[in-house]
Length: 565
Image (tube, rainbow, N blue to C red):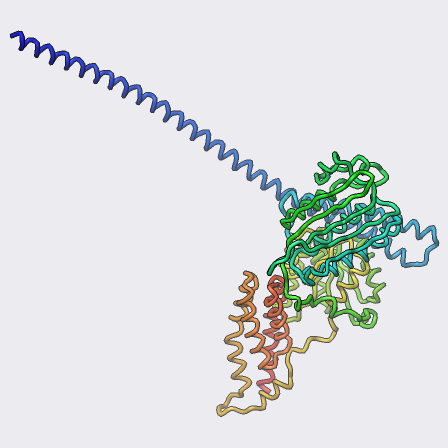
């Protein structure tokens, strides 16, 4: 029994141990479940907080977007409101200076001009800074002729440099390609700013421009630009904070030099936007060297800009009497100024209106060589007026009248809106007599209507007989009508989407087909679009698109009349 009793005792202990383990396991499971439940509750709480935070962040993001949009709208309005009266001040001062004046009067006018130009520079700096901060500054890539750029800057600034008793010298590396690819406007802006600074802080000294080739490969060149002066120099302490907004050196803050402290900050932002570097080497009392380095793409040296050369050597006064201008501007000072400027250019056939509705009414009643259209006007603004004019031209198969936007808002986004509305070009206020003259000269058209057909070719086709009752001209016209509208629509899609290759092919096909039928004016439009597309500049062809359908309809109508006759 003892053995049996011992076995029972062992079994009892085993059972008790198992029970104890099960109890402890159960307790551990309950603790684990409790901890899991607590963790789950915490996770749910965190998820709720995260969702709440996400909602707050989305609200904050939307608020920032709305604030950014409001800021851009505010900048656009301020730009226009500031530049419009400045245009009147600078323009009237320029016209006054062209009239007979005493020495004292001429000096007074010069003071007005200098003060207005300084104010314009301050406004431009503030607008540039705002655009950069808002991420609205965009590069405009194109051909860069550095030698021509430097020559232009020298012509522009040399009078200021000489006035300060300084000399300006240039050292340009001959190994640099004749044509490069980059943003010529921004490069010019940076160099002008640096040279003006060098001149401002130097007296009876030298400002030297150096342009050197740093690296050269098959597709790019790294260029280093230096502007060295023999002026007052910059302390090491001031150098460390030079390129920050509103920061000036201790001596630079004095009333002797003036300025806002924005120029160098804008230069740095623009260089950074172009993926370059900028810096300064200077010692106080021993002059300064400001430098920046950019990598620019190479272009085919045989390519050239077909622009001002087309108009060089022409005398505006010879053709001025044939020019009639419609001027739309709600500001009485600007209307008077532009009319005086046009009169100075020998253009007297000018009608002035104060809003878009009056511009449309004038357009319907009379043919104009070109239209100068203000952007912001009451009742109907310049954009809406332009859209309606383009629609009328299309409906009535009229030839396109060049429309030039005039506005104080020079932001790229606003320029794009003008082009999208159907305007042909853009002139920012304030503008000089020379700028206005070049713009009018660029878009001036003869008062004679463009020849729709090349009648010698049309008559040759018309004289060819066919075996049937219908003429060959009539058959070819039917084929042309069947294919052309679809091709024009395809061309429009390729231009808008930026498909340069496809646009080139379709434009060439349309040009060839039109020329074979003697369709002159429309074929020139296709040729212009083809050239823009070949150069990868499809955007420049967009203003021509609205002229295609009216020109096509006019050509078909003319051919139909010839075919019936």
